[in-house]
Length: 172
Image (cartoon, rainbow, N blue to C red):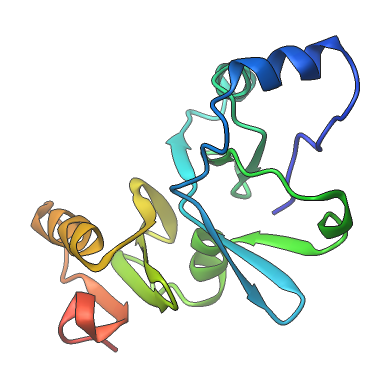
């Protein structure tokens, strides 16, 4: 689970991308420092067929995403617009969704919620893979709406709920 597209500070291509990107458009992303690891919530997840990954990445790069992370078989890509300061680039960076999938998932449909000092984060997994559209950060109301939306989707079995009781009701 390595981050790709390292920051580039020189060149006409970098200047062109910077001019095309909205200023500070990372409102949907939040990092949580856990020890010396930067855990990132709110990535834009895209499902791929494994064959057209390069085309998906080209489209994402042109849309202003600055980095991405992929699961082991590249069937899901997590796209990020956040840029790190040069001094922070040595710090390990992990996508919360992949961390939860690798370390805490039991398979099936799952939803995880966390409370930050200034808001909430929600991550949904299906068969230990991030569900596009369900890795987000925001206020209580917007995250509750996201949880409700996920719970109303058809699931093959009961949804496992873990984390913040304010959002999930009964949780493990």
